[in-house]
Length: 599
Image 1 (cartoon, rainbow, N blue to C red):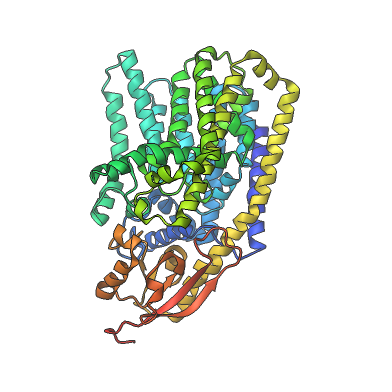
Image 2: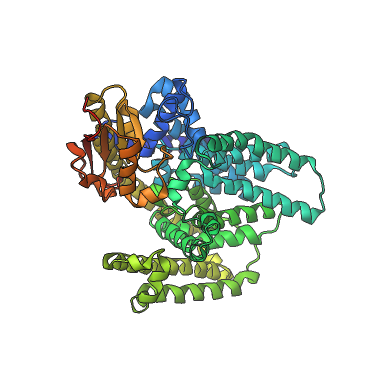
């Protein structure tokens, strides 16, 4: 990496992060933009205090989908405390990931200027900056997966030390963000296909790779099984709620299987690009030309570039199949922050990488695909209302319970899917246009290049500055509701008190109470049935867990807030201009159980 490029990128990156921090403290005290950030801090504090991997001290629980991040936070928490330590680690690790972007583009294109340009775009992508400042694991899994990809690209043979290093980093990234298991899968498939084509029957490289994967993952999977009875953390079951493919197969649910292999992955796909185009339309619209260059240029790295492309294209739909929660863009792309640099790399090469790639073989397929997507998008966006009575019931699990307001909402969803489909059509047709030499010549002209780069960078920078306000509001919302609730409970509680909550992070960190998690992230007693019917949760508490307090967003529950004979409201913590929380208030209740003396 050229020193001047490193210096420029470092200065800009630090300046942007500092601007986000200054914007935050101008509105509230230092904190995090998600309550989940505080969950990691609770685990880090308990590990540092000798209580093991636990949320309630001394009770081990598999409830953190980023266990490696919690471990990495321990020294930062010990030295700097929760907020400063979390932000410093996030900024450093995301910065390391940004350097990996430069090295990857440099390796792929052998063009330092393109590498610098891709890295510059990454610094100005607001979700990357938000992730660096969030106290979440985004910087760590981005650094691990992107540097793993770089090591994979520079390795020559399957048994090279760099290839083993890539497997180590991919496996560690899985321990930081479970979706990163796709990086391991992509590497294994690439190496398997390459070995078959070459007739390579060597056993030693495969033995070492398998040993690497098992050595790093076995303790994690064993810990999960020993604490919650399954190899996945408890958070997976709670968030997915049986909507994934494996769960549908296990309960012989044919409709669920159809959803997970058709509706969910496509919803994820179009929503991701529909959201990403709002960050930088130039990069998104240049993706298909970039894919053509990655796949159509024949050199020694072609198979690795194809792996890169297939991983990028399959990542989001596979999330919809195996872990459907909301969307890949949910909570400012916190689940796919490492996918954004991959998108930037492909987009930048699509615009400006001069290669002798083959285009003719893809022209017909691109044209047909683009026309089909255009027709489908028009149908969904403009004519869906005439057919929705038959289609919407297929999209929901229990159509007999479909209310009119739900029906109207789903109609709007499908209309937005139509616009997302039209965007996909535009991306494919731009790729088709790129297969013509005159179009490529026009895009590659010096004047057009300068105009495109200037407009795209300025747009990115403007949006990053605007989004700093959203980041500051996120932190303020969490501080005014979750952090304030935890501190309030700490003032009124006494040792041994138990509080039932639905946001466990900040309340768990500050309240000094035992947490009973009504959403089931750390309380494995909470079943999926309880999540959909909180009367069952109440009955469980009445018989087994008579809590002393309850601090909840009342809109999350239908039954519990109405039991005013048991739960007496004593405080309301409210925030204005809510930008991140599910509801703009938390109500704290004192519990009075009829068969439990009030101490």
